[in-house]
Amino acid sequence: MNDTTRFVTFPLGDERYALDSSQVAELVMPSRVYSFPHTMQSLEGVLVRRGGVIPVCDLRGAFGKNAERNLYVVARCHFEGRVETVAIPVSGDCELVQGERTESPEEVTFVAGLLRTGGKTVPLLDLDKVVAHCIQPALQWEANR
Amino acid sequence: MADAMKENERRPLFVSRPSKAVVATAGPVILFTAGGMRFAVEANEVEEIRDRDDRAAIRKLKEPESIDFAQHVGLGAGKLERFVVLKPGECSLGVTDVERMASLPRMVPLPRVFLGAERQWYRGLLLLENEVIPLVRTEYWRKRLAKGTGATNE
Image (tube, rainbow over all chains, first blue to last red):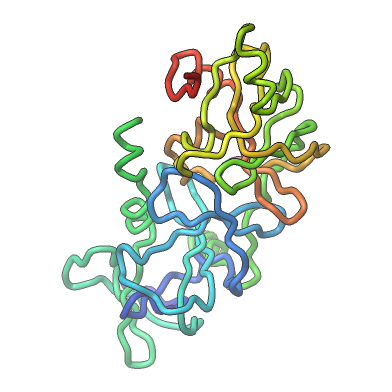
């Protein structure tokens, strides 16, 4: 089924990915990440936004190194059966685009479909799967659970 | 109707806001440092604070079991200069320094994506003076010390 709507595209590793704009809460300029000791891989710490905290999920492990981070994409995902909001650091520009969502012809890891916009095709990030994959207790702590 | 609902779900970018954080107010807390980071413990959970020399002086008397807090949370062996004795006085957290008390800081729950041991270590995160400070869950540390795991008493 095809679907036309708005999407946010952003660079992650060497590729550009897209998220449905309904998933994206906001784009945040680089701000302080508050870190504290914890056991989770890929979580850097938290951003403070409007009196609450948003965990920062660094996806470099899954998508390769990013250059200097320009923005945080704050997006909602499903995690362990509930909606969670996470901040994803990205480098480069984010764009708000209109496009058409289509099924991906083949199964690609972390890709939920394809976005066709302005003659280009951008993979749609399956944020639920990425977050579930990246956010795990580190091995040395897993052994102590 | 279904289309209208679907359209409602597509909230416009940059206008939508994260749901309001569940914020509670913690009671007075004592701020301490361990492994170069700052933590907090509820003041009414603390029996007393001893320094290293006090601890040596009372060694002949009953001495609380203690744990190197920094080491236990993965910060490496800490410089143990102070001991935060938890009520009722049978166990203590070995820390680098005890800074001061703070009143009624706002506390937010640990985000659910933090699903490892930190959920036992901390009750939540305090938003205090432009800092985010973990509030330790004293019942966990008492249990940990009761089991004798990580005790630093020689």
